[in-house]
Image (cartoon, rainbow, N blue to C red; front, side, top):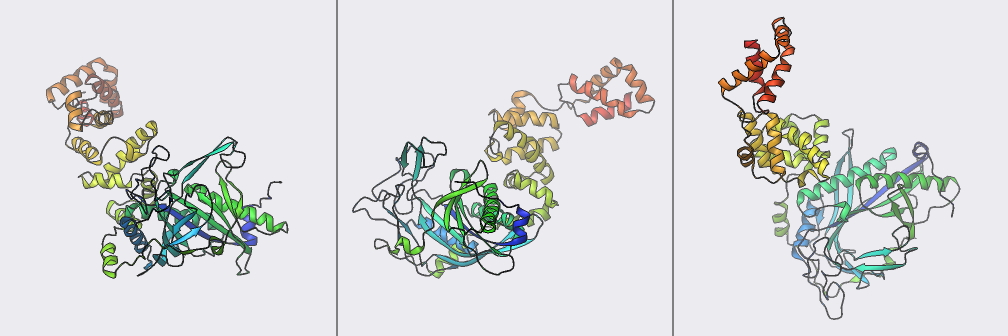
Length: 498
């Protein structure tokens, strides 16, 4: 099969109007599965977190996870949705090896949350309102591992292995209404929406939203129509895109690919497609089913969900400060520019800096430590910033020791290194390594006089008005004291005694 013709992106937006639709699947971080008591821990040995219910064995009856329902309601409320006062689960029937029951328990025509919206901020500060059609509860499928072959997919594989640990894990599927009018910014809008949704879900505490582990996955629906026609084209659905960058790339590629098909006189096939991470392309999967193909019918083994108005309001009261509101507050309180805030967010440091400030540190110094030195340490170790073995309270203590004059910046870095190495608290490291700044004035004067005597040529320059030459003497004194002197006081003594 020949490779598709790809149209230059600028030409695509000149000739076509894209329409987006995004479906995001969120694994909830409940301790147990949606309809049984099996644990949901990621990374367990295959097929060790299963039972008759999630394996669909005869006679096994499901029971709804209350915490999952609470999480679904809180998500709906945070997305400005209406919460349905009554709704049923349904059976979505299809045969595939990773669903042992041969049906998925989901919500069909009676979702728990409907008609919401999420305002999404783009890079230039403009805002796009993405309307939410529904957020419904369902269960995840198992996981297939296709062994052999070049792609890791079933085609060309020698055999397949099935792990049902994930089967039955609670899922929330959040479905947008069509998003028209984005034009050339469609890829940016898609990425910004998933980013904002991920931030919201993390703030709610309902999911770890680790895209690399599959706990947040995005299906990208896209269609093209002739420019200005006001029509909707035939859509494709690119399944299970698992990074923010890939969401943007999938939209961009599908726009270019579909334009190529249309301009060559072809027709877009309504189908699912798979995103190829390496090349940033999509490839055909299966023809897209309609709802009739799944033969939905009400789940006979589960009672309807009927959250009372009082319960909904109790859950509304638990909603946290929303991420974008929090960022606006922090920007004002800390006097940050938009670029500085973006650096904090991109570094994964915002929560850490805020916690360090809450522990008593000045915002500027807390930000400097996390974004600079500690980010370097995280990069060196190949871990996320939050995974470093140092707490915001410990960083605040180091900053306090510098502020009191007990440490200088060089010694402070050594203290942080000690904490990261597991040597205890900052005070433990200071005591064990003897890292307190030399504050004995007599000892400092003696060290300065010795350094001045050793470099008479530098002394003459200082006396001649070249005060910047004092840096060489400062360096000598710092070396002689093992970096434990107060560099500012050393410089003052040099200029007094030269």
